[in-house]
Image (cartoon, rainbow, N blue to C red; front, top):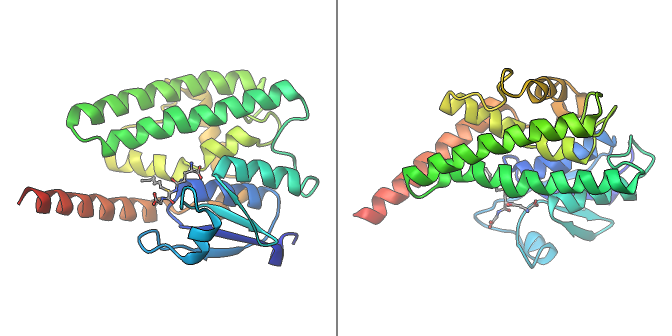
Length: 235
Ligand code: GTX
């Protein structure tokens, strides 16, 4: 397997951004050393590799760090071109469109989804939920446009947008379990609902995506910690 000793991933298993990098490595058939980071007690390796944001993921290739998940995914695609199907089209316009939607996923979907459970008030949370559903509906249109009748945002095979959105699936499914609301509704967003099923069946996705039940447990533990911290600050 290519990669091997040359690739080290500084990550944390619950992070959807780390999953993003694992997906790209997996789809490219690249092996890597996984370095599990304790986010509450950051290692010297993380701090020196990502001194600006001090966040995971960081990919070290031959010792050189690359930061920011979407940047790392594109780096893998370029540095290991030919080891797997390319995640970006050879057409500059299609590449630009894919980068646009990858940014949309982080700026609109991830941001509103986080607001839906981290909002300070109930209004903020419900506004987050509303915006999250609006972003999902917009992505239904993006899938229709980008796939051109094929199976993925990337067309016949997965691309940057599939990896960007696919990395969130365990968390979005965990949110469905916890809230009871269907995020990828087969009636409102039939293409996306089918895409979710198809994406989850890919070997690369099965390898890289964290188990939904484990994410639910983790999320409940974090909720309990946040509630305890809020109660302590009131006293
Ligand atoms: N924009 C970055 C990327 O795409 O790589 C974002 C990376 C990031 O936020 N990493 C977090 C981190 O290292 C871990 S993932 C947090 C998201 C949790 C969502 C589910 C509740 N954080 C360390 C820190 O902020 O100090």
